[in-house]
Image 1 (spheres, rainbow over the protein chains, first blue to last red):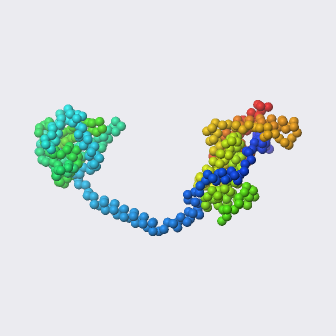
Image 2: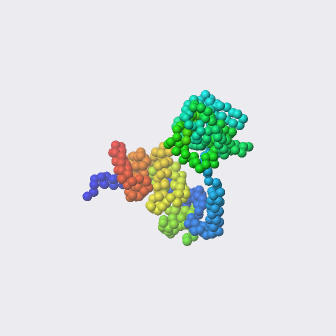
Length: 259
Length: 196
């Protein structure tokens, strides 16, 4: 038995069909309409499957082999470059040119921005003496022992300090440390640490401050692996000096440990 | 392979002398040139035009939308995966264009039911007048239906598509089609009742 709704629907559909019989689009010439449409069309670029089939023959083996050969050559060249690149020495601080440039900027600006907090000792010829501030608290025994200097560069991003670089070097009091730097016209760069009393440590350099970060103390430190030694220092050594340089974008933590 | 230069006419399409819709489509897909698309246009243009016209009820814009439908179909033929018939896929493009057009332009059933349309030649003058008035009422009620309801109703009652096919054309679930048809018929019934 049909549902009453079905008969109502059929009745309504009949009315709609009746309406549709009288509401028709105007008679058109379909051929002309089709021509109008075709005028807007362009052949597809790939021209369909028939042409695709022929394309497979246009790929001659020679270009494919040439591409493969080129890939092999590039791979070999990449391997050669990698193998030729010297491995970093244990004491190398792997800073890229960009980072160096950033650090140089920081160092140059420190004096101007925070003169009272940093207390630079001043320049003597090529030397830059850095005098630590009153916050330095040098313990006993550092005068003759080795000192680990730790520089930690923090970058401010979104009001947070993010570690950008850490550089650690081991130095001996009053003994020069040769550094591999980039200073033009200089064969070598030297750094000294002067422990002049219980409350002061001077760091003097014959180089621009930033080169300290680029130093290679591998030779001077013998078999000491700076990073390992630093971890050792954190465990057994005593912090003898600490200073922080603040700038808008960077914050530099400089610490000295007695080893 | 069929000769591309053979004469194609609507009659030959109707008589099936050019092959089935599948064969025409296959022929076109083998080599996608406008000339091979022509039989597909000729075999479907009446249906596409009817549907677009009855959804938009805008005679002036119908032909443009029909043209746009076939141009899009030609350009997007790669997207046709054969999950429905080519005719259904084409209708979907046409219906989408029609609905977008109505939404964009804000036009709603601008077609006036002229005396010529309403004039029924197969009845006595008195009956003719009465059935003409009835037709005007139905036309007004259908023209006021929401477009999506009208589209479902046209595809179902006029084009006699089944629910699944309508769902394919309208890109919605079967249940949605049922609901739209139910609502459309109910609204029509109410309006026709009120107008009596």
